[in-house]
Image (cartoon, rainbow, N blue to C red):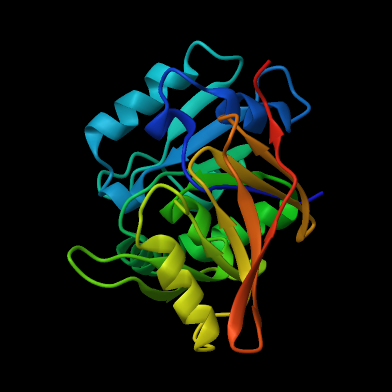
Length: 232
């Protein structure tokens, strides 16, 4: 079974006191203590980000580690990645991350891990990367299309309610035919794909939403998806 859990935003990165999405990810592995590896490439392997990952996951039932490409601490990259049960990609600069992954061959290794059954997850840059296309934002510039790894068909826009320019930019790109139809997710919402198909949507916030977004003539239509809040 191949699984990807694409978060529009949330998890320990944005909600350190609300780990509902992170716990959901861990629950998808049928092991008492799954191995979870944080990949913070998009942040430049920021030390503080890595520390926050360990602060969140060490108390949970898992074996956490991280993968740094800026300060490598592994004998063999492929072996290190393929021994993990979950690969969790953090937020940051999506373009720089994908370029660095390609240089290291990590893009190919992640594909292999996916086929072998590792759960792939992440937020923002760590959710865009799994799709054929994504909507990303450079500093002080308009949002634009970026090609991802193509493990999931179509396009993706995270932070749909968290950043005011996201929704109109995604609509414009779809309307102009620059990006394919796809999925948008609010902060706190996560799209769970199994074998390439949307299995369900879960959230860490009661009102977080997700959508299927498509072009309909000279308009863009949003189909609101059913979301299961993970809280009580």
